[in-house]
Amino acid sequence: MPPAVLDLARPARRVCVLTGAGMSAESGIPTFRDAQVGLWERFDPLELATLSAWASDPGQVWAWYAWRAGLVAGARPHAGHRALARWQRRPGVDLTVATQNVDDLHERAGSDVLAHLHGSLFVLRCSACDRASDASYPVMPEPVARLDPPTCTSCGGPVRPGVVWFGEALPEDDFLSAVDAAQAADLVLVVGTSGIVHPAATLPHLAGARGVPVVEVNPRESAVSEAADEVWRATAATALPALVEALDDEREASR
Ligand code: APR
Image (tube, rainbow, N blue to C red):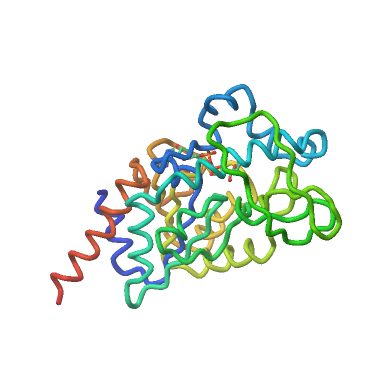
């Protein structure tokens, strides 16, 4: 662990953790810019996660999200998710999680999540009248190319995933809460994001502009790296447990 990262984390009492798809990678969920696998190999997620794709072929988009929901349901939070949840429970530490991920792995590891900046896979709503839907994804042992989405019990419209598609506005409350948390933090930890999708990608820069120390955890260089005060070239499932363990050990030693 870079000593400077522990030096920044040790005194931190208001920690804002911003996570991206790399946070879920070691749980087996492919990142957005990793190659898609299997049936979806020939599709570009950046084309499927759009209103126009939904308008032209809701059955294809619903099948893709049903496949992704199955991946998430079959995945488990890893040691990095659990380490963040443990850190969040430390007395005297106010740790907030703002994620671009639409999965529920942070919650399943025990973290409270302040903001799902790009929505949530498992929050379904009617694409016509916007009412929340209690429909659910079908269990899919194998991915299929097309699947009729459920219909809204109120207006009969097709039910869609509650995720933010390209070109759609982010949930305003979530985004503004994340901006407040990043600017009020005394440490911002950015884990597993390429930092190229705005406005979520502005958060580390907004924090840095306020003089908040920014640490990046990512095995590769990203658009966040230049704004980071410290860069830790490691994966989420190795770096986060190491950091929280070091903080716990120091706390024990100082008792
Ligand atoms: N640990 C940490 N970081 C990792 C790991 C890992 N095990 N594996 C990959 N990464 C990093 C990659 O190096 C990359 O920088 O995670 C990042 C993933 O980048 P993207 O796939 O672009 O995902 P993300 O940044 O979350 O995308 C933002 O774009 O596609 C839209 O809405 C979608 O929320 C998504 C948004």
